[in-house]
Length: 168
Length: 334
Image (tube, rainbow over all chains, first blue to last red):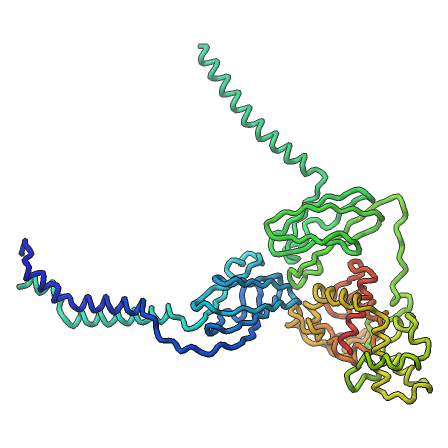
C-alpha cells in the first residue's frame, strides 16, 4: 500500500478515468443540448373534453407549439371546471351548458389540467395532461438511461482501474 | 400557611376563569344564531337538503344559514323573486327570506348536482292572516287535455319554415288566427289545416301556409320571452333534453330511446316495452312538436312524468316563465 501519492500516480489515475469524463460530458450534453425538433405548422384544434366524476375524457391532449386550441368542456354529472397549470385558462361548465374557450399553446412542455370546482371527495385527483410539443423530458430521461446502461457494460468489460493499481 | 392559601385561591381562580371563557363563548355563539335555520346541502343520493320543511309567517323574516357538504349546489325558492344563493362546498352563506303572501312555497337546488338533482326540494309553509291566493287551474286541466296521449302532427312542413315570409300574408288572414285563445289551444298542425281549408287562402302554397303559421306563433311571443326561455332551458332542461333539443342530454345518455306509442293509457295491460325510464322525445322532430299545442306543452312542464324521469315544474316556474319556455320550444320547429 502506498501512503503517498506521487505526481505520476495522479496522472495515471486521471488517465485511467478518462471514460468517466466522457460519461459526464455525454450526460451534460443529453440534459442541456437543445434537441432538433421538427416544428409542425400551427393549426386550429377543436377539442371536446367530457368531465365526469372524477375524470376528464380524453385525459391526455397532445398538441404542437403555437396551435390554437378551442376547448369544449361538457359536464356529465355535476359542475366541473378545467384549469391548465402554467396557462391562464379556466372553464367552468354546468351539465347541459357546454362552455367553450380558446387559448394558444405557446409554452412547450407537459402541463396538468385540473378540475377547478370542488366536485366531490375525489375532486383533488381529477387531473389530465396537456402536452405541447414533444415530451423532451421523457426523451432526455430515456437517453440518460441508455447512457447509464452503456456505462455499466463498459465498466464490466474493463477491470476497474483502482483494482489494477492495488494489485501491482 | 398563608402562602398555601394564596396558591389554592389562585388555582381555583384560574380554573374558574378558563371554564367561564368557554361557557361565555358558547353562549355568545348560540345567541348569534338563534332563529337561524342551518341547512346542509348534499347530493340527493346522500340525503339532499338536511332540512326539507320550514314553517314561517307572512312578513316575518326567515333566516337561513346554508352550506354544501359535497359539490356546488344552489338555493332558490320557486315562484318568488328571492335571489338565488350559490352554495360552495365548505363555505357558509346566510340569507333571509321574506314572504308577503301565505301559501306553500317550494325551495329547490339550482345547480345540477347529479342525475337526481331535481329531487332536491323542500317546502316552506307560510301562515298568514289573509287567505292564500288561489290561482286558476292550468289551461291543460281546464281543457281536459290528456298530456300523456301521443300527439303526432297530421301534417308537417316539407321545407324549412321562413317566419318573415309569412308576415307578407298578414292582411289576408282571417281574424281568428290572431286570437291568443287559438294560439294557446291549438297545435301548429291544427292551425295549418284550418288555414288550408280557408277558401280565401287557396292561392297560397302549402309552404306559404306553414310560413304564416310560424309567423303567427312568433307574433304570440316576444324576443325577450324567447331569450328568457332559452336561458331557463339551458339551466334546467338541457342536461336531459340536450342543448339542441334532440333528447340526448348528458343525464339520459344511457337510457333507451322512447318508443312511439309504446304505452297506451286506456289499456290497463299495456306496458312500456322498455323497463324503467326512457329518454325524452326529440324536440326537433316536427312530427312530435308541431302536433302539440302550447296548452299541452305547458301542461307537460307543469306536471312532468310522461313515463320519463321528468320532474314537475309547476311549483317552481311562474306562468310567465312557462309561457316563455313554451315559446322557446317552438323555435326548435322552425
